[in-house]
Length: 210
Image 1 (cartoon, rainbow, N blue to C red):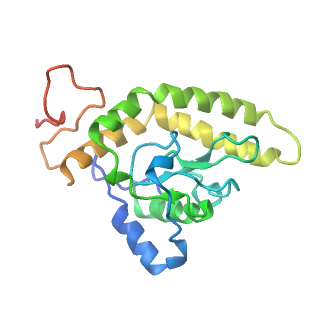
Image 2 (image 1 turned 90 degrees about the vertical axis):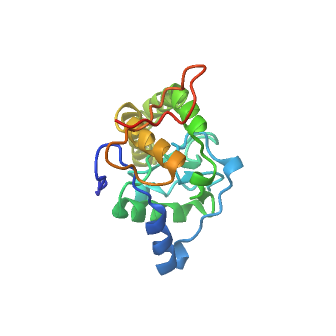
């Protein structure tokens, strides 16, 4: 598994050129038709997200490092969402391949909708999704019967999500904030914005230079 190719801590890698090139080479993978207004609230901020995906729960076959399932429609009938954004070409390939099974419910236009304040708000409310993931992963890990292995894999996906929330996601989102504000990689000497909301009376994006 490719764990990314950041140039430095917090540097944001834009996966969209790689994704578009992949879709041009393999048009059958272009099943992206999800709508922002229908996105799953569990998606982490970034360009990719799951909206009204199907409920076959097959995305983890190709993208276990990125896709997890919810429980909104009952056992074995949950929708898919993106819990980790890709940070390298191999990861982008995996995620695009996994999105194929969402039958048009995934999208890759998150950059057109996320804003710096919206990402900060999501981060401040992350305890909600963490609490949900802990409860559901525990329940699924204890499931038995003929679908036991599927439940175990789904539970592992939520445990991986929890681990990403606790370590790794903050650094990614700080880099993503810079990208949203500047639409370019950061230059030498530039610091990343913080995820905490600016104090009352402060101005700007929170991006400072060293």
